[in-house]
Length: 316
Image 1: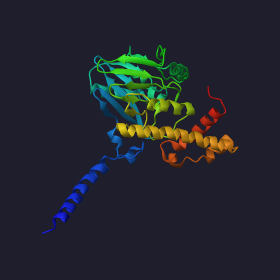
Image 2: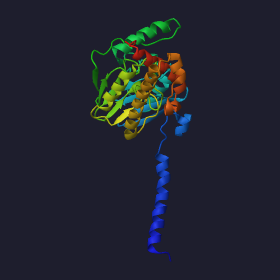
Image 3: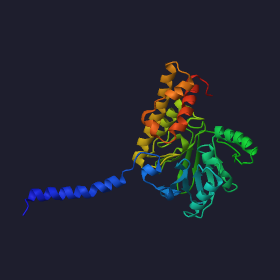
């Protein structure tokens, strides 16, 4: 017969062995890559339930990471924040919403004015109420003029916000649309659900995606994220690209993303101080671990040029 102490040790070891695989299964790699994350592309599009009546919607865009929409079901209608990147993808989003509720889509928040979030807006129902920042509306007006020449349609909301906040009572919950400062587009809007302690950040938060800066305000972007992190009644931060995380991880990853922007700014500033040209800086940039993030090869040179322009005072 085995000694009691040894039996207890064996039992504890067996219990630990049973728990560890569960812990490992629950742990998710910190990445925007579905393959590395272990999520097959066949799983998309999908809803991620965030709270009662509140869902994140993840769909895949090329080159293979997610574009995220927010769906909030009210008493008499549905609010969407950010659409998808084509009419077909937005039709699919609307069809999937109908599996959740028969209520009509009545509100649409333009979190980002970029085409990967707005190109399908022609599929939204007529009479929908748009909430858009004046800067984003002006950009959509410009995009509409350009698109018309090629036969494409860009939806321009009839009016823009008159202040930095807009509150909508959906009956089931209260939605506060906030402009916290320029970030990825200059007209970035976020959707705050105080009761659910949730903030949908659109493209102001790209989870493990290299900071995309073609229309960004790099240093201001850092301050905008700091303002989001300082908001009361927010535990859960939802990105516009990359995976939706649980509340604890979402804050950690938002801080990581903010620090990534800081790193990009610091690296470009270092190269400029060395007296390099912008083209030389693009070749010499050392992103460290950021070089393994989604879009690093494509977005790195764009970020160098944008930060360069900011340092020289050419951003307005």
